[in-house]
Image 1 (cartoon, chains in turn orange, blue):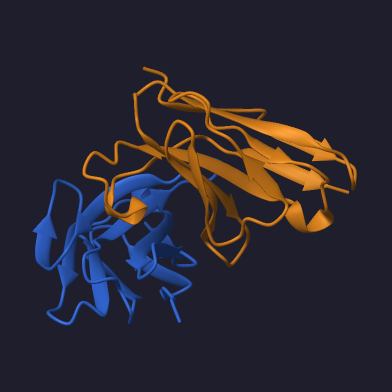
Image 2 (cartoon, each protein chain N blue to C red):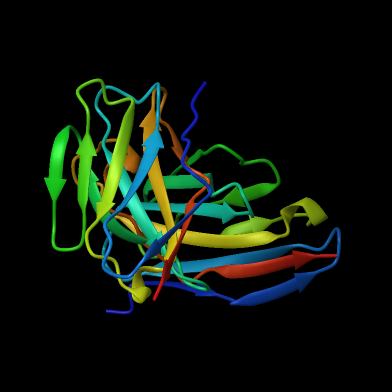
Length: 118
Length: 109
């Protein structure tokens, strides 16, 4: 199993450009989530999904869109990139079998995408 | 206000026991406390999780007092390969969850 994969590994955007960060998992996990990691701030939840067709906002959702059409994939879209979105982005998945809080489960993280917006 | 607080950094020597404490005053009644380890240029990796009292696995122990307002990750006999950033994750009411800012542990020979 590849686990959680993310593409690209690195990306540089100009302000106002759009792009999609890809995330895929092959563990048949129901829950998937996106985080951003900034120095001194830990990881902050952007959006999450508890199953195909269901998404919800996390702590810092502004400027990002998500959709979940399949169990395996959970892309993150930046519609108009801003310098404040310069960060490292992590995708994670977990089984969520009991339907409880996302934080109650062991999450499996991808290797991350380092995004720079100039 | 949901806030997960942990020390910014800690130093230790090989073979010592390391204890990292996380504060989480308003933890949700039904949520767990989870710790992750992160090496440079990698995603975080699950270490241990607990709800109350003490949990132990092959790499760490987690101590949680009765009031659950804090928790302590204990790493026995650390080695150089334990040098990493350690994160505490806690859930709060209204499905809010917060990672701490991370504790950078440096193990010296």
